[in-house]
Image 1 (tube, rainbow, N blue to C red):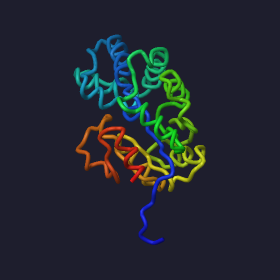
Image 2: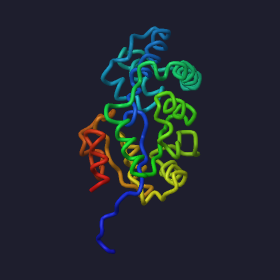
Image 3: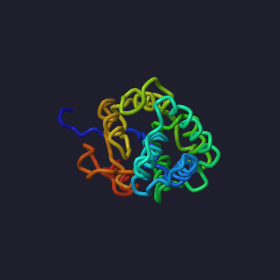
Image 4: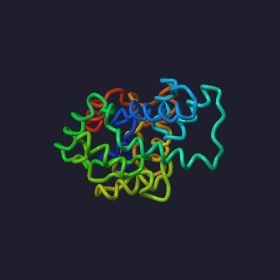
Length: 225
């Protein structure tokens, strides 16, 4: 009926900075590569905030902080592939789900919610990370940055995740910690919810989220409401 609030029928989660604190392992790999480039480790605060933006962003943060020039454009592809090769073999040495996330997923799954992951991480890496941390079985779909031809903030990955989870984008809530997450949710017709515990760089109001969750358990309460 007109004016009735829409109740989401499922949840799509971002991965890095939302479900899992992946920054420690990403920073460890970035530090290795920077050392080989003759640069000091990545400064922890800006490096952590860049963790959800990919290898290039983290390396650039470290090089800029050290006053070192960035590699020429043609060198980046090789650096990124080497970063990913090293990261894949140690991706769960230090990375762990954020406190409260496993309990949230168990609660939502028990309630029959359709759950999916939509991340800009490569799909194979995302699946491996979720499996190694014991979270993979909760999700009906995992859409990575290479699953579709476009990444978030484009809405295509969100639509794909919703479809694979057996629901429509208009019937889901998207929980993430970045502008790309919020923009992708809005463009797909999903409800954008900010994970305030993640790699959030700006004032929370700057993200344009419909709701802000400060702890994972708040999401379950939001769905109940």
